Image (cartoon, rainbow, N blue to C red; front, side):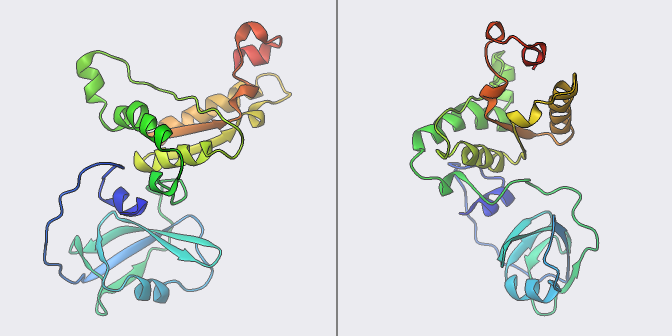
Length: 231
């Protein structure tokens, strides 16, 4: 099962899934909205050909490989609310893009990452469980983990792990490089960091990935500048 299918089924990596045989009916109509930028050419005919006989539900997220990238779509509405796209289905492309994608990440999941099984397992324990099942911590009276420090040489998969984490937890993914937050004007660095977390609150649940955090995350007593200490 790929990442998009798990997302639509609300099935995190490693969860058990019960499959049932159900008779599908053709859709009378379906309305799709583009997520982000779409190809310039008319995509309605392409979508009809690529999605023919595919079972879709209202709210589903769809990713289709296209030249130069991935076309992301969201099922805004369909009648009935579940069925397959047939030749007689009236398909409409919404003029406006989707207000917010189901996920703001590339189509990457833990199954796409090799050689990091131990790290993935630890992320599932300390990050995915608190995000998907916060009630476990409420009942026990313990505070869930709110941050994870990933360390390693450049190119070892830290960013991929963060993207996959957001995908598996159905969270918005926000990424920033720590050196980009450092500004010469007094107060601008703190403002940029504050705006980042405010955006995460508005689009919650969200995963914030701060790359090269050692640029601003050293020990306070080792920092001489006031801006570095406040960050």
